[in-house]
Amino acid sequence: MTTARTAPLPPVTEVITRMGHQLRERLAALAIQDPFMIGIQTGGVWVAQQLHQALQLPSLLGTLNINFYRDDFTRIGVHPMVTPTQLQERVVDRDIILVDDVLYTGRTVRAALNEIFDYGRPASVTLVTLVDRGGRELPIQADIVGLHIALSAGEQIKLNGPQPLTLEITHS
Image (cartoon, rainbow, N blue to C red; front, top):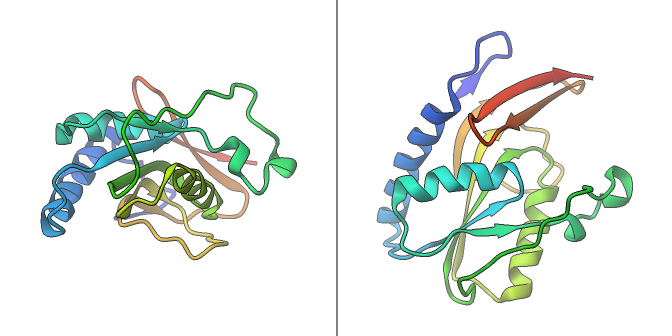
């Protein structure tokens, strides 16, 4: 779904509900029975929590902090509140559902994949993102996207939360 900047953004809960249906269909089509869902800190974890609950996945929800895996942390800095990665389930030969809030350059996803592979080689990775804002620097594409939103270079989109989850577009 493409949303113009002038149109009001749909409620995040509605978008996540639709994403849950799409993800359930994808998992069924690929015959994936017991995926391991991992959310990227912070917004990706918020989205993953809701998707995990909606899909009633039997495995625990993993969280990934990719700050030390980023290739641009010298430019953007390390987030002052570094929370640990928590992967209570094994990664090796598992079907992973990787969840992030906003897909932009692709560098966050690349860092997340690097960290996941440090734990072992998964059978597959399905990328799910709440918002795809375009502007990719790396050839990374999400399998499930809640919203496609075209933003200008001076605009940013941010997921606020965790309760309630809201999207905010800001201008720099």
